[in-house]
Image (cartoon, rainbow, N blue to C red):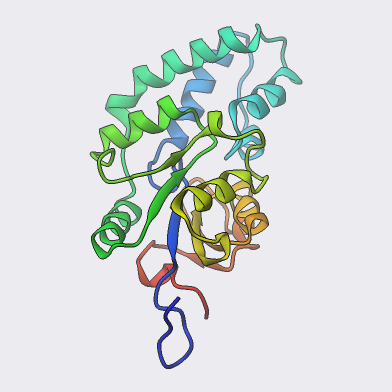
Length: 222
């Protein structure tokens, strides 16, 4: 990777964006969908619950709540959860303009990008289509594509492989401790972004923590 005279890397070989909470403000919609469904079981989700499941794939969230209340089988509950999420999606969905605008800038500049998510491919496609990003993002690594989800490194290692770059040359953009851990385990440079739903303590392991995603914030180095 090229460097400027101070030794700071000008730009990464590729940038790998998390979806929920990083590009799209879907975490509150997901939280409310879970609340809608679990209220039918007489369970009120707490802030501690939300912190425990943020960034986790469905299986981990299901296991967390199943330990607290007797739930129906995962497939049926997931179908009900998807129904509630979709019902809220159109009216409650929004994007994080800082991350989306930066992603578009990277594409124009010729920097490879990907979206790497623990959510289903259907969900990521819905978000990208809604945000008019489907034609911009050439690669999506979703839950169905890996055997081990975040915090395991597999999703980011796979994305780098598909883009033909080494993970150590990639920058990962994440909003949760689970995602940060995955990026670090893959050997990537990790940028944690502060959002309303997260706590900076959850990002402390990242190489850099920012309030806003910009192309400059994604460079490797100090």
